[in-house]
Length: 543
Image (tube, rainbow, N blue to C red; front, side, top):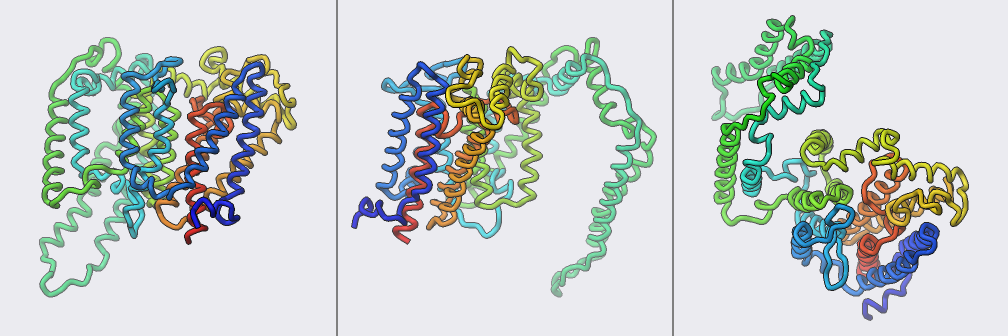
């Protein structure tokens, strides 16, 4: 019996998944019709839905494990397309995100949502581990590509980035600008002193417990000498004693009274008019020092690579590389929403394979630090305005905050039951921008109210629960990771879009999956649907 002949069996196909997907697409088409009266967007969406379901069903014709073989080549091909976008891409609304190929418009960032799932599923499926992953496992800091990337970035930014040419001065000028040249008021409370004493007591207690801990049972050939015991005691208590002495000596100093104000005051005075760092003065020593450190780092990484014999791909490429490279290329378009979505999908897969909670906490702290860095060094002005508008939409109600304000007005005006199909004033009078794409949920909320919103959220929740069940029952690790990745894609895309239109998240260009108008996004989700059906089919048919 052929595989196609088994498709009619009740156990082969997840009809519940197909039904929920069809219902979401159906009400999405009706919503697009209401949002674009007098236009043909809903007719085009019907074509895309029919074509998408065809693409999903075609995926049942072959074993999903074929994607394991093509994962790396497909990922490399999509990265190549992303590299072409800044060179020959089509610019729309100030962003260059599309490629025109043979009369069709292609958005490579949508393909990357699929490619990142394929490549991470293969990477983690091939690696069997007894313990959970740590940040070190994901970063692989001793891979030879680390120092090579650092040296390449330093060379590219050698004469361009002011932070590399005058780091202290650039920091001082930024701080002075943010404070308008006025030093902060000094606050001589005992908060910092109490914190320091508490940390000293805790450090002393830990050092004492280490000192009193009974030594491990040693053999007759491993008897610790007296000088080793004294060295151990000195290394345990020495740092604590030094910090305690410094605390006693400088207890009444200003730096212990309010270190934040002291440091900020110095930076403001140095970076303001008349300060020592008012003018931009490039220095060479800082860049030379960085280059020397990176060269030593590279020499050690090469030595490790040669010492281990024949190098393996995992000694060159780390999981984080597979995520950060496409994220960087997508952010350069610029498309912050899709870049963050790719990162969220990758993080969901990593959590699924297992990660220590300490590493998760450290990643959260690192995310905060990187967000601050991105604010000053990476985000464009319009992206910053979106974040500021998210915090205070009324500050620019007719400018950057217009989209968010109109969306919240539309959703709020729907109240409990809504205004009725095709009766929404915000959408029908064209107050709501992009109402058939990014803000399709706003139209739905205005016309169908709180009840309609709950129905749509329940449909997405049901779809995700069904997909998670398929992943849990998958016959192999690769299939489970594939379904997990596509489930994360639907979840995060729906979460970001709904949060965006009701004011919980900043406005980014992320459509609601299966619901908003658009062929690229719909086909991406339909590919995931097809692969999810494929995993469920082969689990029930060949188990």
